[in-house]
View 1 (cartoon, rainbow, N blue to C red):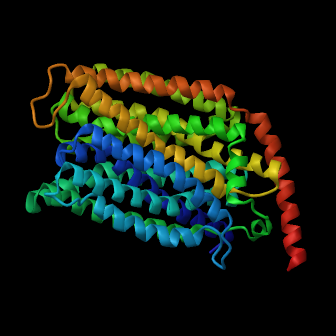
View 2 (view 1 turned 90 degrees about the vertical axis):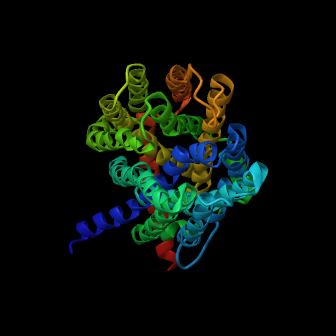
Length: 459
């Protein structure tokens, strides 16, 4: 096998981790609120509180800590691999528990059980995902390389998303017919959890960490966090990242309610939004990559986000399956641009930090980024509870309120509009434009050569 083919297989193996990352996240963001309110019959505010405490308070603590500790980890397997090796199996354990809560313990009992289990899953996920993400800017350094890896990652992410919104509800419905509704959810979570764990472990085959970074004298935990939070590029990017995840999370969380309550269709119809969305995303990755390389991150992200909010206006005229399919496709067109820009920008922020500090700290930075991404679930949980409980007055045990359909459609568009406006404001404040990124890459290349020479002299 040629060296070029081996490098391609390495990239693909690493990219397979996206099936686990996106798939598990998509199931949580799309179905967990629906599961808690419509299946477990937990109050909408208690369900939202689980999100806020697990993905807000606890997530804000464990993600940065895992990231910093992985930077300071030194083993013969590298800095990141041991965390993935331990975190991936733990993800499976907690994933099974999430979709199999005990019955007969009352609402408060279920609340505390789910709070602990979701928090446990979030910590295990951080161990695997934060370190898996941190490998990306370490191994691939140019815009061309990173945009290529982003496409591989996002194609596998789409496969993970397809498993989440396509296969998961099918398994749930199938097993529910034989074993009961709650058991159907448990079986679906178990089967998909096994697949995701295997994908995380396969990604280890594509991870080849750079030994020269082991020479960097890492900062203490608190100094690392303090230094990171003084970085304007990171702070503005974190808000931008949060808004993009909130856009995707809002669509995923509200889609089951839109389909079942606005259109009167079955839950399995969710796939008719997601499948064309994913196909369009794959198709338009290549054109958006060319746009990114030519115009840079800020223009690419701004245009793709504005395109997405325009597509959302279609929800006011969707009344059948054909409308859902078309809507999903056009969402995919804009989603491809958002993903390309957002993912490559992550590496730019890390590179700038290395120029300033002389230290490679992907774990620290991706700890904050993953923290922010999961905080989107807090926002989604909160806004979903406000929409369903406060505005609509929805009770799953009672008939739908008369204005539920209209309020769901209005809520879908308004929230995407708010997320987009905030994103554009912080994108304007984001300091790394195309020319500045090019200069950073030149300096990073020189710095990496110096580190390699230092490693050679030691060996």
